Length: 439
Image (cartoon, rainbow, N blue to C red; front, side, top):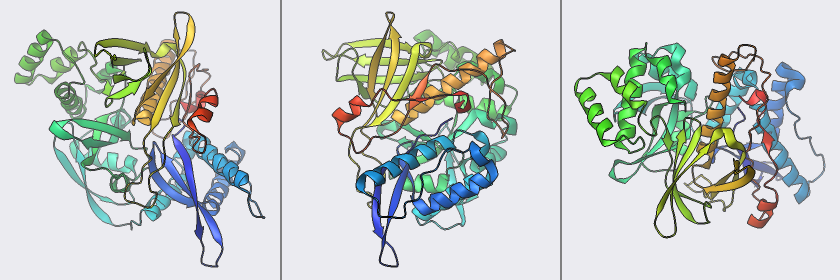
């Protein structure tokens, strides 16, 4: 899939020879990922091009004269597009040249040396598993270490992921972002700038029926059972009173299999719930709580008269979506290294035989976008399984297969940071298509 990379800001810095250079702040999923110079990215591109040739996207050219402001803005936009497009090829994503460079710039940006360290991984039942890692270990590597320690079958790793999770008052938690395979959990945890934040292990699929793929692995069943209990406790999954009584009885019997079978019938089981946010439906300024999963976006909307309204948006009727940054940047050199998190996700939806735009204002817009992409990917895989003549690319365990499926959904997550809110609205009809390489 295309990654949510963006470069919303750049800064001029003095160099050792008395000149100046531009330092680009690269964000991933709304959080500062690294700061790099053009020369570093240029060398990286040359290394990648020696391996992958013309399959790489075009790289912004060098300028040998002083750049104007418009030239600098154009280069920043081009670098942003390059980072988004270069991550679309799973073979590039898994190459040593790609991963080693991103590991280095993450460590350098936050002045972290390579050393042995202890890292706590939070499990859904509240326990922490402490593992010994290198600060340079990627999320993919850390997940392998955790899975070995808890006995999770290696072939099932693709069904799980590591997440940054923030714990709030009264035991409530917020899933802030999923860590990409090449991210360094040790670095991401320390650079997120959030209190009470931990690295958590959770299942990473939006189709609850995929539980069936894990039932032969005891450790996997334990994990999804823990998460089911946690989701009910957090009120993300909403059993009826009768279902709750049956689930409590099965829990006392320690019958995990029956518990998970009954959980499939529970409303919003397996969904990811976002923090309270606002939306423009049915009118601007309405409060909303979003639950995402099972090919739908379920919204509990609070109207201006404090009445609530349940609305469900089916993914099959979503044409495209876009994440846009509306706010200002925080102090880039201070302890808080995130955007001001004034984000919106707007999507085009077919209702009453016409396309309409719906806007959601949420700090978790990038996480929501990742969930939408995940649902599309899972739906495509399911369609391919039902239709044998279809071929689909499923980038898993480093393998790549051909795909001949055209997706109607589109997405874009580029920031237009130097435009006003009015100007942003004018540009909202520009989207990057999710092609077969994205899935």
